[in-house]
Length: 100
Length: 100
Image (cartoon, rainbow over all chains, first blue to last red; front, side, top):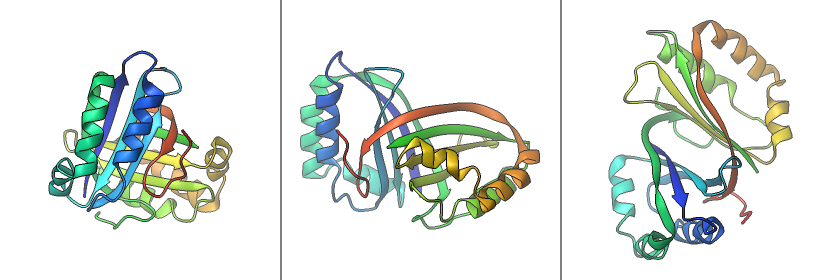
């Protein structure tokens, strides 16, 4: 499995709109085992995205899916930047295969 | 919903054993919507845990479950420390309710 933990920063006042676009873009992504979009309660512009994929190739391929490309194009003008993007190697959890 | 993104540090050489204990402790937790245990590929002792709960009370209650208490007791001697624990407010994702 392949995972990502990322923190994205919306332009001031645009987090709610950005969240809606992100959520619309992430349905039906092949190989996606978990994808959670969250607000940071301590930072009004910050968004956390945590992802689990069956492998890294599926994550890369997802970036070419039409609905994902459309979401990225709509979202880009609302994104101020990325504070962090941390790759992980998920080993399990309820609903995931176990890889230890 | 209530989320947590945490980074835990195993004592040197004990990450694999710690991961196995964690994975055994997290089955069947009421209110748990997602729980992912992952290795940090850039740090041989680090473990990332990302959680989504229906609410914060369910997370607190989980710490009293017998299998979770047993896992915590077994894990504690193998844990060197916690680098971060970030609460989040999940707004959705495949398999989660949508809260935007």
